[in-house]
Amino acid sequence: MAIKTISLLGSTGSIGQSALDVIASHPDSFQLVAMAAGGRADTLIEQAIRFRPQVVAIYQEHLREYVASRLAPFGIQVLAGEAGVVQVASWESCQMVLSAIVGAAGLRPTLAAIRANKDVALANKECLVSAGELFMAEVARHQSCLVPVDSEHNAIFQVWQGYAGGERLILTASGGPFRGWSSEQLAAVTPKQALCHPNWSMGNKITIDSATLMNKGLEVIEAHWLFGVPWQNIDVVVHPESIIHSMVAHPDGSVLAQMGVPDMRTPIAVALAWPLRVATNVPTLDLTRLGKLTFLPVPDQKDFPCLHLAYQALAAGGGTTAVLNAANEVAVAAFLQERISFTAIAQVIQTTLEKVVPAKPVDIESIFEIDHQARHCAMSQVALHNP
Ligand code: NAD
Ligand code: MG
Image 1: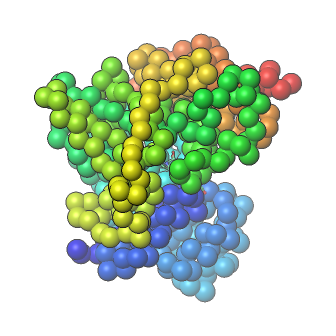
Image 2: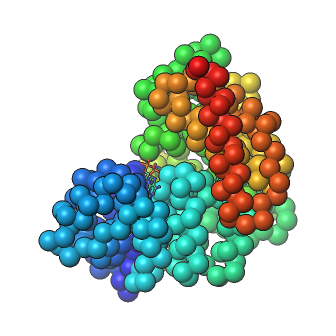
């Protein structure tokens, strides 16, 4: 394949580092021309020295001078702040942007990439949760090539033959580390326990989202916008081995699934190389060694309310999913700082959803207003839990 030039947003994160592994394995297929990260300046500097992009951006403005002084001998341009990240997302010489910033912070840069007519490999699910309708309208307007990186959506993307009306999406969920735990046990969960995911190694926020099952809720919303399937046709099944990454059930009885060893380098490689394929260092799936695959219904919503809250927000429509996303970001951060309990995450989100009832967003700025209002409300809920 001809060399594809890549801009990587969120290079220091879990997805970012896996993406660099894929890029490094294929110097004839991929060239990293731009990269951005939030903080962790030393990691970003090391990555830049290794991959020699034309430009890097660091979100935290106060780190700009330090990064610039370290990268000056290499002739690498250094930008900072959200404006710098947006410039990296729309960098002239890049063809594809891998959007792997965590949270709604990824929305503006990802939109900038779409508006600059870049192909987009999308890991950042929060931008679809916050702004799905407006986001997909921009994708359609610019006829962007949008390839999902989230493993479930990447799986569906690979087997997708279009929505004729009766198809059902079946998203698989590992069930997280607390499947089968009682309400009392869940109330006492510590951040350290919640950060140990059984199958996937991921960033902190998504690891907590996986433990509460909010991750699957965000993914239901993400799937709705990516594939245009109504929420009533999107199911979740617990599949503890995480080998089947998701399925499409057709009305004729056929169920198409994509399988593989749980390693994000596979969906990242699929997205970066699309429509071609490249090899990865991911081990080949050996089904005889696995022996069996198991499937279970999702746990009771009494113990894991977040999935249900996400379905409710999606059904309510408008800006409600932006409220859900913002409240979740605040609640997860508060849990990681040990300011609220594990079970209070869902309570903070539920109360925020009750208190912030947004008007239908008309543009991206109105999404940011809703996001701001919901964060403010969620923070006051956190303060009530921990005065
Ligand atoms: P992470 O926390 O490990 O990394 C996040 C990256 O975003 C870091 O490089 C950080 O510096 C950067 N960042 C944060 N705020 C920023 C800002 N304002 N501007 C620029 N950069 C900023 O997160 P992750 O686990 O790699 O996840 C990234 C995204 O991919 C999330 O949306 C997550 O839901 C999604 N995702 C992750 C996985 C996974 O396996 N990790 C799987 C599927 C989807
Ligand atoms: Mg996923």
